[in-house]
Every structure is written in C-alpha cells, then in structure tokens.
Image (cartoon, rainbow, N blue to C red; front, side):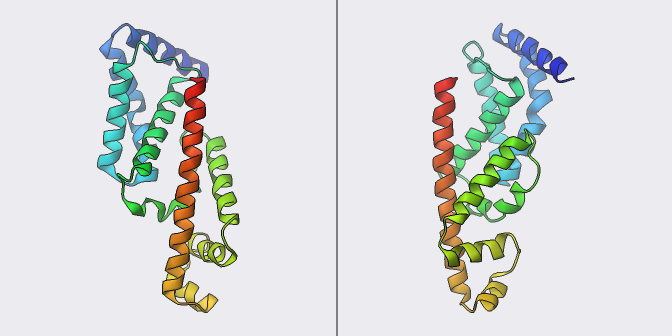
Length: 193
C-alpha cells in the first residue's frame, strides 16, 4: 500500500512540475487535513495553522520546478510544516502558552511517525535532566504528575511564586534548547537537500 501511495505522489509531483494545477489540488486535498492537524497539535492556533499550511502549498506551487524530494512527498510536506511551526515559535509570532501542555501533547502519537516522536521526547527528557534539582522536580510535578502550583508549593514547602519561577525557568530552557536543536536540524537538512 505504501508503494502505491508513494507512486501516486511521484506522479502528482511530475504533473505538478509540468504546471498542472489539478495535481496541486489533488495534493492539497490529500494532505491538507493531516498537515493542519499536525501543526495544530503544537500551536493550538487555528488561524496560524491555516496560514502555515496555505504558505506550504503556495511554496510548493511556486518552487515546483526546483523541489527535489529525497524521501516522499508526505515526509517533505510534514517537514515543511514542522519547520514553519518552529519558525513561528522562534520569532515569537505565536502565543506563549503553546509550551504549557507540551509534555502532554508529546505523549500523543505523531502523525508522521513514532521515531520523530521518540527522539523529541528523548531530547526533552535530556533537557529536563540538566535542570537544577529543584527546578526539575517542580517541572516533573507540574507536567508529569499534573499537580497544581498550590499542590506543588505545599508538597515542596515553597511559595507558589517560587513554583512559577521554577516552571518559567524550565520552560524557557526547553524553548531555547529545542529551538537551537531545530535550527541545527534545519541547517543539516538544508545542506543535504
């Protein structure tokens, strides 16, 4: 079944390269919802996700003669969506609260494969392991145990303001580390594309 889908995508891309706008419409129908769902899981912003997906298809059309897809059209489109989501996060054009339930969303299976999902979870766990002891405990109680700030403050005998400070520090560190990793991955992929 994968080979048939892959073959269909190769045919669609060949038609697209020749300027067949119907091929673009077919690709759009086939992948729009999957791409939107993937972006929405991270951003939780319908308008931003719609804009991202629209931009991906505009670029696909505008660069149709230059695009070289190494793996599959689906992988290419999902990678494009991921990079655009990360770009939105990097330049601060999305809401700050997207990091609030990051841990929970990452435990939902990925649309484009479990390998990427496991790698991302591993990277987050590695970043969390490098936090100071108190910060790490607060983060884990909040994100993994799902305790409220007040419950954490009572359990650790610290103020709720201190809990908030530790969480802000942890989320800031996650944001910075993940963005740096994403930038490095993007640069690496751009070199190989």
